[in-house]
Image 1: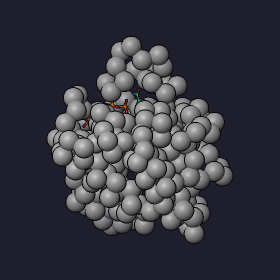
Image 2 (image 1 turned 45 degrees about the horizontal axis):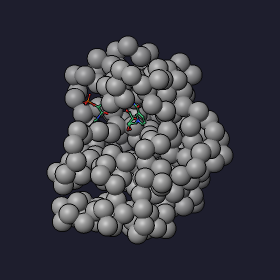
Image 3 (image 1 turned 90 degrees about the horizontal axis):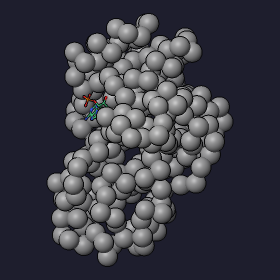
Image 4 (image 1 turned 135 degrees about the vertical axis):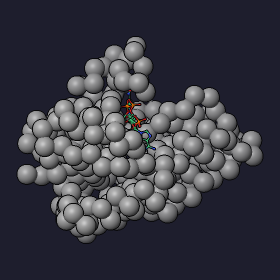
Length: 253
Ligand code: NAP
């Protein structure tokens, strides 16, 4: 039975992805920041287990990796789903957003990569709001050309510093920290695909579409089942790596 670990799986698209993978015969590990909410979610899915993970705290990812190692758990798929969308825009919002959506997600990926089997999959739940077209030069060029995770992390730090210093617009960054975090996540996806190719680990980004969840709001056109199916298709994608998908079809970065 293949095993998938899904971050932010106690509600919304993460929970739905876990439900759909379990229905296909996967064992699912729900990685949630609140133990009680995670346990409640796991109870409704046959064979599911909950583990504690706060994506905003790198030490939490290290502790989860150690717990999985102690329990001899190997993963066939890691679904980096947890993310935040914070109202407003200032340096604090920028820092908080990239800390979870980008730097935290990369810390989780780095900590859990040794638990992934060779030939496994990493799926980054991204968004059309992170398409490269949301950026202007010079930021756009820097993001498009980044080839290592370290470079992407440095761009995230540069974005927060630019917002803090009031220079983000001339540097080509939009007034939207969520968009920037997802554009950088897409760049990190491409870099990780190259870095993990020797282990045949496929790393892809996926857009679930605009979905009715707490994050997407009540007026989104898609239901959670359709959005979850888009994520599951990326988990099951058999060959591609370093790509961006929606509903099982490759889309432009
Ligand atoms: P959601 O309903 O707000 O759920 C977000 C999940 O992430 C919750 O389980 C939340 O846990 C968890 N989370 C947030 N911060 C966390 C942290 N520091 N550590 C661990 N878990 C954390 O959002 P959603 O709509 O399902 O979104 C899921 C993914 O899809 C996100 O990556 C989002 O960017 C992406 N996406 C969504 C849409 C959309 O229209 N909904 C569109 C494009 C992309 P708590 O319950 O503890 O807060």
